[in-house]
Image (cartoon, rainbow, N blue to C red; front, side, top):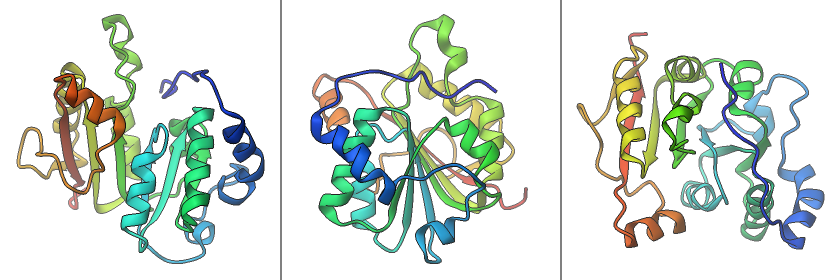
Length: 221
């Protein structure tokens, strides 16, 4: 299976650099052994995963809104990780942990089977050039792997502002026996549970469309 990302550069602020040094030991996850999520968060609670959290705004909003749930975020963008760590600290959140790694590696080697209650994939890299479409994360092998780490009935929420990627996501998930479309077929209306990010607000102002997909793990699998 292909790596899920291309590690990006980008300007990192001095405060983000300090956060990576001072806050990572508190909120970051070192992948030196398979994860026990209840030990990681020191409590039994629903475990939610956001793949590719960007600057972390949606993840922090969800964690604030639902303190009864635990949130694990995976990304490889250092400015975004630093920004998220600063937000976690400012809000004194105890229900967020951060992983800096390839999500495919994490799913394959570190997350237990049937451990996740929800997974979010909001605005992943669209790899817009046709010759790069094979690098897109939502592929048959990936959703099969993801389903193995999710509980029966757990939900998967995706969103993109690239229509052709939305159509690909829909095609892949409709063909996956592990998932059931919670919208009854086709795209889902935007859920109020999905935070409206600055990125999305900018796109909407520019007239971009946004497509949401909402699935559950098939309880018959």
